[in-house]
Length: 283
Ligand code: PAF
Image (cartoon, rainbow, N blue to C red; front, side, top):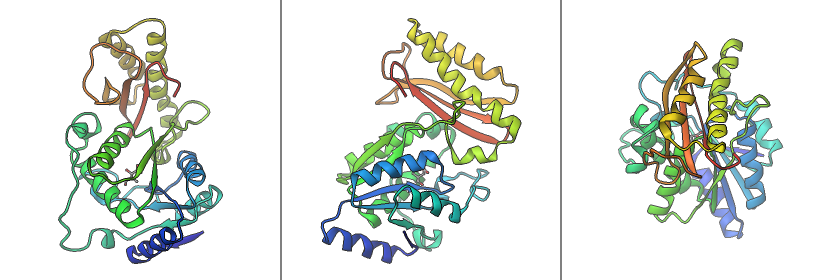
């Protein structure tokens, strides 16, 4: 596996692969890889001849006071995980190359970025869509893979790729969970052992809503009460949002149906965790 750090070298590698008729897959990441990332990489391996993973902690998607400086980093460990998952090439650019002095161009997706993380992290999605567009332009993949844990991010990137005629297949992959149900996330590394236990309230709340839905409950206020009560049972958990939304448009819903999204963002101590499920579906 090769590591490329400059935009020019990445562009050249991509040009060479395309000239040789090779299909390119990209797994964009911010590093501190876990099994969730590895599952994206293994799928990318099946779908392309050249598998590229980017590792870039993108400063423009972090707000003031968020965890940019503290974000966990471990390139040696990331390389071992990426190698085992079949990655051919890691693209790990410097922030000063991605955003040189004078940088002033942004990509914005409109309505889909309004609610949920868009509301609680202003500017976050503008940073995500901008960096993903840049990565797409540099790597020029045929297919790009993202996890469904960041459900809204996946919806926004799909919309962006379609609206801007990027000609890139955007693939969403299932959430990967620890044995006890906690969704895998690089931010789980921040949790103390006690907080790690408290964090299970997210997957417990999803399970509670799914169970109520399975037994016939459709009223969102009732489902929401159960979700909130499950999370509130953990003393250290503070809800940022808990919302039922249309799984495609992310519009508000008052009655749940198959494919309705339940999205959660919950603070456990200083760590903000997200999780979600689609009602009526195995996920
Ligand atoms: O999901 C992430 O890790 C990031 O938001 C992404 C897509 C790599 C963009 O920085």
